[in-house]
Structures are given as C-alpha cells and as structure tokens.
Length: 197
Image (cartoon, rainbow, N blue to C red):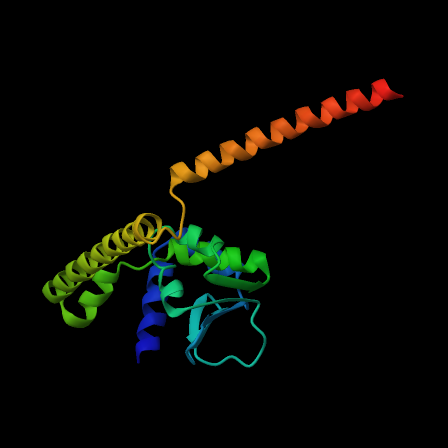
C-alpha cells in the first residue's frame, strides 16, 4: 500500500517535469538499489516503459546501488543532498553514470510532501503536520549545532582533551619556526663541511 503510493506519487511528479521525463527515458531498463544498513529494508527503483517501478524484490543485479543508515538515506530527500552524496555516510556502488542519471531524475521529480500528505489526510491536517515537521527539523539542526559546540568547548576547556584553535595555531607556528631553524642549521653545516674539504 505504502509502496504503491510512493510509486504513484513519483510517477505523477515525473510526468509533471520535462527534465524528469527525459531522465526516465535515458534510464529505461536500469535499476537502482537503495539499502538501509542495519535494517532489512531494501528498495529497487526500476525504469520500465516510461514509468518508475518501486519494488521490494528484484532478481537481477542492480546497475547501481546506494547504501547507508536510514537517517543518511533520508537526508538525501532534503536540501544539500549533493553534499551528502559526496560524504562518507552514503556508499555508492556500480555504474556512476547511471547513479548520476537517477540523481537527476529524483532531483527533477521531488515531491511536495505537504501536497502528497494532503491527498491522504486532508489539506489542514497536512499543513499542520508539515509545520510540525519543519519545526522539528529546525530544532534538530539547532540542537545538533549546539551539542557540537558544547561538546567541543567541554573537550577543549574543561577536559583539556582537545587543543583550542589558538593552541593549534601556536603549535603550527612553532613547527614552522623549527623547520626554518633546521633548514638554516643544515645549510650552515653544509657550508662548514665544504670549507673543511
């Protein structure tokens, strides 16, 4: 039921975008596997006869596959998906050109989640739920940034486990000074050796 809705929404969005339709035609017969690590969830997206199929099973090998934690895979739906694909959280295997074409297809066929949700639960409830989701996402980003800053501050100031930026810069400046002094000493030794001979 859920996969049928996903497939229907995806094909509806593809049909509304010329760029997505073009990408779909180029992918005819190609398969993308999406694997959520640590779960039995595996989805296959197959382009066939001008439609995208969403399957839980596919007998042949996939042309390309993406694997990562469920949260890493969900992050591909939002903004900055391109940066997340380049990170280490998502693993890409198979034909790179096919992966790029699937990325283009999904980029042009991104659904309006509020609109899709409105089809199921109604406009008002979907709008409220989308607002709550946006608020939670914003809170999550702020909490993550705050936690990172607080953890770094604790490790640097309280625990003294990590150096501060100033300490790192002073250390690197000291390394540069030592390198220059070593170079000067080596040159001096070279001149003295040349004088002896």
